[in-house]
Image 1 (cartoon, rainbow, N blue to C red):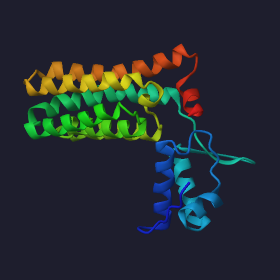
Image 2: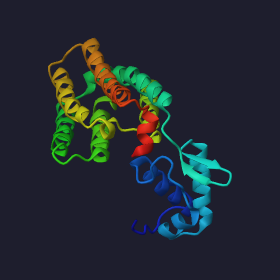
Image 3: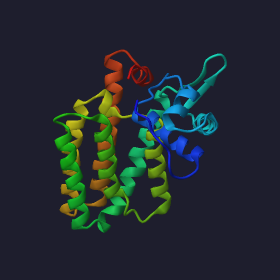
Length: 232
């Protein structure tokens, strides 16, 4: 792994951001042993800020600490994934429907441009980049939601998925093709001024289909989502 030199902000904060990013992106996979000295050397800092970062990540549930073993990256909790996706399908569907009257042509064009990047990404599939683009796409559709309470719940759901390091597209690559097509269908509903109920149903069904694909893959291979995560 190439050396990363931290130059801005407190070293503890920077170490926290760097280690968390590697966990979220899968560079540090579930079960990976976090050796403080090695990480400190890689980041160009002392062990102290790395230790503080690891403690923060442990409090967030991203890291486990075991006696005689040390710090390791936590596994993905399949129950948490299920509940997070179910909740997100409801609140994001509502947020998208409430945003619809406020979404202009420029917003639709921006979302479509992101979706085209996702389509291009299918040729040489990169699940991490695809997942980032997917969040960018959906952000365009729900960010205009006038209800701040619903919007907080949507952001919390996306942040929770990031903390779970869970990307269906990594485990079920075929779902990515369907997702791009469903995105275009959502954009057409917005362009044609479809009713709020129809838009909400489409957004919820889109999210639910992603969850169903993830669980079907886990079931067909006789593995739980957490065991799939440990193999990455």
